[in-house]
Length: 423
Image (cartoon, rainbow, N blue to C red; front, top):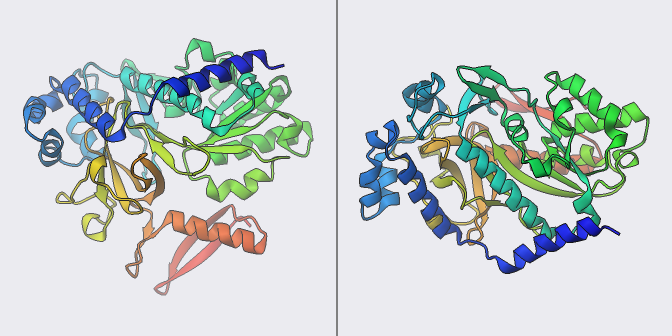
């Protein structure tokens, strides 16, 4: 009998019964106020006079009209280069202990994005909120006694200029709370291995020692790891090694294109839960099983704004025009594409994260990611998103009963040629 599992599940269900969901719009207003109040005495806060913004009749509208949009280059060139060099109180009080290295989905060189202690706490709290949301997925009690395989980048972070650098998954894993370490796999020693192939080999070697109930990580990485474990032990599928595997929390990229090949590694269906964790913060997670949409984290250190995704507001390089209108959560409409703008407890202000989203449920603040500002085909004004392309490829996979691991487009004689890679 899963005694501990029943206790944990009971606590999760009890919390869900005695607490109510915060109103997303009111939560955003409070986050907005807290952000500006905390940062009002930083160089950024003084430059844009956060005190006056907070005291204005319409603070959110004044904020939007006073502070320009920032992409990474603008934020770094004007402000974050000082933070990287160790200066204090630039865009957020103090100096961050960490910088998340990110090449982004479309960038060419690694970005260095500040990760403050406040952001680490926000990510941790959102992770806890996600655990409590598991009550909605009707998982058996014994699931809550199983271990969790968190497959990310190395936790062996690099020290530079009195701070540590690494990918956000490595930074997050190096800061897991002590009570969670007994559940966390592959464990601290293996997680510190820098070389990816070597780390996966150690995971495969030790896999039978663990009772994994959940996986967490990027789909492409997860597939490679599962294939290595299956091959190492010469079994048919991953459930031959981890029979109690029931949940996969996917993030980093859309899971849809990997669904067919991922399921081929399983003996039975598992619950897939989407998450939206970026170098800039934990933005959203799937809260209920009846939808694939994710709930924006509206009450925990991130203030969201939304620019209508229309050609007249988007520059050729994927940035947005200075005169592009911006909406608050209170003003958005369902089923329309928006460019996501965030301000955070890491000192990002009106920051263009590069993703486009659409609301499936405005009242619940639930979204789907529809693409990237740079990942749209618009040769004839069709504004075709990468998500629509992925949907078409998935349909092709099902129709022809094939797997299409990768695809690309090539412009030839003014015609787009669709090319399947690796089939």
